[in-house]
Length: 111
Image 1 (cartoon, rainbow, N blue to C red):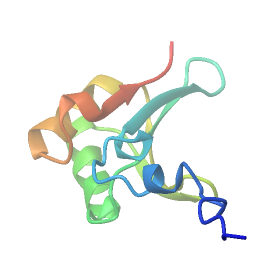
Image 2: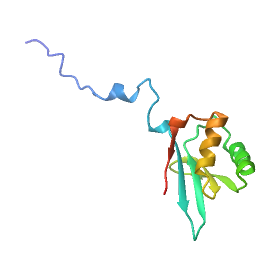
Image 3: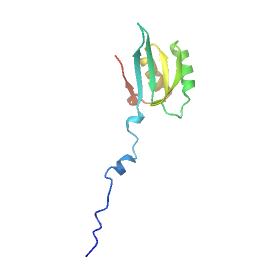
Image 4: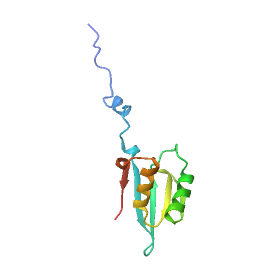
């Protein structure tokens, strides 16, 4: 009898996970606004690359937007920037003018 060679197990999605294009969901920068108590809101920015120093970004945002902010280490999302108030439009403009990301890479969430 001859040996059948084509009955080996092959993962059909193995090459899909190591794709060359980096256009997945991880490239997006998510900008969310969360309602606190009363009229108070909180803007969070998630997905900025680790190549950038987030503390320096927050320092410049605090000066430009006249608000308070911090960098929080989230267990699931990594380092997340938090800014007081609804700063969605300001942070979008800041990220695009500084050159951190393009307009297409920004995803706005919230009401």
